[in-house]
Every structure is written in C-alpha cells, then in structure tokens.
Image (cartoon, rainbow, N blue to C red; front, side, top):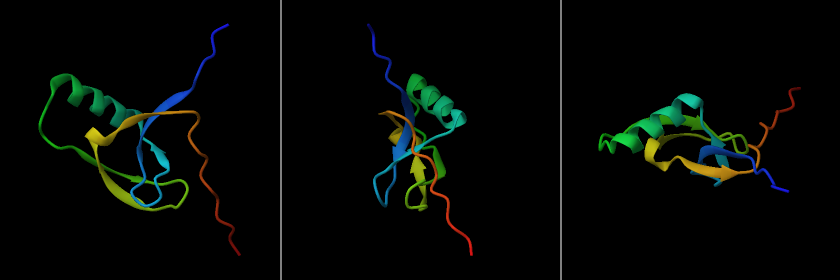
Length: 78
C-alpha cells in the first residue's frame, strides 16, 4: 500500500517560523524563475496564519512543506 503525503509550497514566517502557504500565482512564478534561472529578484507579501505578522518575502525562499496548511486562527470580537 502506498501512503499519500500531502504537501504544499510556502515560506517560513520571519517572526514565528510557521509555514505560510503561497498562492498558485506565486508557485507559478517560482517555477518560472527556477526554470529560466533568472537573477532578477521577485518579492511578494504574505501574512502568517498563526501570529498574523505580515512581511515581504523573496520568491526564491518558497519551499515545499509536508502536511496540511494550518487554518487561520479567528479572533474573537466583543
């Protein structure tokens, strides 16, 4: 029997280290940059689902993570 492992691409949060999943558009751009070996820097913003910190990330820092992306923690409003 073959076990199927789920994986997704993302970047580690600069504040807490939690993996942040990236959009399909960022994955596509990452693949294009890797395929063409372009030296131009590409950046995007992402918000951590755990600590809610938002930062700018470089496309070359996208990596593969195993498992399921963490669900966003909803804040309780009063």
